[in-house]
Length: 135
Image (cartoon, rainbow, N blue to C red; front, side, top):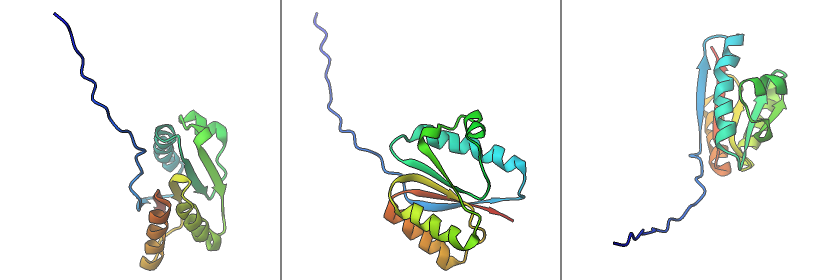
């Protein structure tokens, strides 16, 4: 008796992330929020190694802190921006550039027009936006 294995050829194509923007509303600006956010960033940085995770952070984040949560620092870039006027523009640029899998930013509460502009930028760049807001 002969065993015959049938090999079915498959095509592999790079899965593009679904583009769009998600808002995450946090209840307070506290250290616990970092403990919530960093495991998500760790997952993203280890799941997608062909494009950046771009974090537009208002505060300094150390490499050691990122690595302590399992963030693959080879695939994350942190942009420090404390100026609210330029933060929205930098977020739009990062979303539309096409070299990030996910862009994380804290632009605060946005008007519908600003949110629509960021969603369009995410569509152009074929990436996800994660907008953090404290209420």
